[in-house]
Figure 1 (tube, one colour):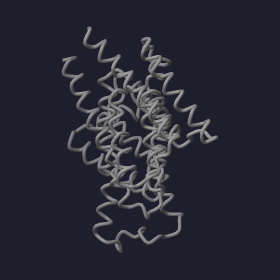
Figure 2 (cartoon, rainbow, N blue to C red):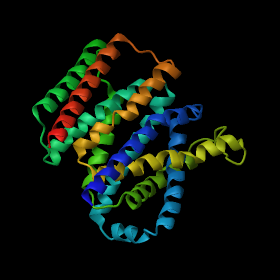
Figure 3 (cartoon, one colour):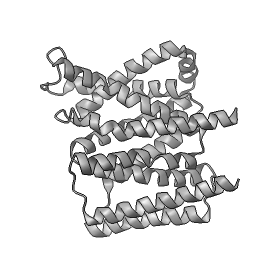
Figure 4 (spheres, rainbow, N blue to C red):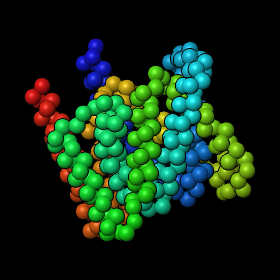
Length: 294
């Protein structure tokens, strides 16, 4: 059973990060729409999509279990806030030519997962893993020195998602009902934003072209599926092991930013990315070495 759980975790992790890596292609199709308006669609259509899945899976009793526990609901309010912030910032980064910053953030994310695993989950780092984290930190410090500023977007994305993943790993909540409640917590704010902001060319879906409406509704699927896979992987794998898979998404994102969307890749950024890549390679090598030995 444990082996099957681990194999499922590996599959879920790969699917989640492949989907996240390709997500910028989707968001670039609707880049003329404001990030907050897209975020509103992400939340509302995610709720409807999750409700359909929950009905099909017959998991409504899990919702009742969560609602009866105020402490659990409080934790889900915190995780939903982190999730909404991460969703919105990612949309803004992709559609404002900061995809390389987003990519850097999700390269940093696995190393933050490692640190959080050590601090909060009593996971221990071996010598080479400590060196890997040190190399990554050096890369970030070099970017600070080169640009004279901290990579705020990258660390905001990495930090919010790392803490979100940690919270969800520790909560006794199944991935599907937990994600639905998080989206429901965000939904009143999305509806309020839709109601109070001035109308735009894309606000009235009855007047939109069918292709645009399909793209907007697809925000629910694009948002929900990889997140469900990620939460499923986090439940089945050690948090530090999950970090090994997380380079897949930012690698795809990085390739898209440089080759397809012509974002500028300066020498300062190259040095920072080289340090992060080196740290991930060293960490992965050490993990595989120990796994082979065991």
